[in-house]
Image 1 (cartoon, one colour):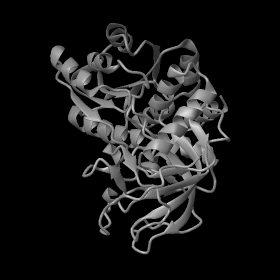
Image 2 (cartoon, helix red, strand yellow):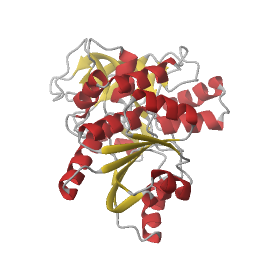
Image 3 (spheres, helix red, strand yellow):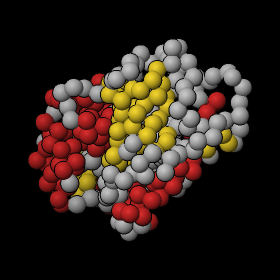
Image 4 (tube, helix red, strand yellow):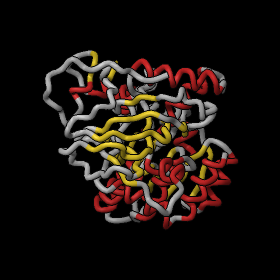
Length: 354
């Protein structure tokens, strides 16, 4: 079963942001589109990638797994239906997608991405805006994990981003790290700014500290000079995070319970980083943050209306940032943390093995 095969009815003008690949509705960017043109024929500024593996966004996979009660066949069928009908992996409930790894198959003669045929790469743009065609029916995936073996192709635009996979790392591990590489880079930037503002080490709380983006954010915050608190929901995760040594303190709390979370964090954090893939963490994150502090929302399960109205209702003077997944140099920084922080590698390895 393949993806959307029809061609978009547009002029010959190529858009660097992919407007020429939008099938419907007209005039929107690819991320907002209902359907994309997945034709393998590339334009001068495009690159075609031969698929190897998709990495579904954690919030998206959790939603699908919950909906289908962990039934791998049903999860696989819905993911395939989304890709087939939309020409991209764009979960209509969470609004999120993920990213992919594959091999560069063709490069347009005006592509500015600097990629070469034969390179193995990870795309650093969301699958919600990446034209995607699957040709194997996802037959190699049991539906029981975020990483999805796949055959087919994807299209990158002139304004897309991709990183060449390092030769010295397992591709699955690299994919898992690069999927969340925006989180540690932005965390480091915000922590450095907070340190300059405070004239000392800021206190950073990371909700979901034992997860992928959470563990990298803890490592980045500590490297930027912060004292760190890792918040996790269970004793098992607390033990894993404590053993990894990435946090100065580890606390157990339900991030969806504002009062319990605030009590567990204690003295308000100067920076709170939300890396939890369940909805309902907005008010707790705000309540756990000190006046004048910053909340960074990396979870795609976040309701930004709830965050804005919650801050208003709590009379909280906090800056709230949306982690958009891109910071210059984010891929190299995340891989460097993987190589130099044994605790990060340990947590990622355990997640992949599980």
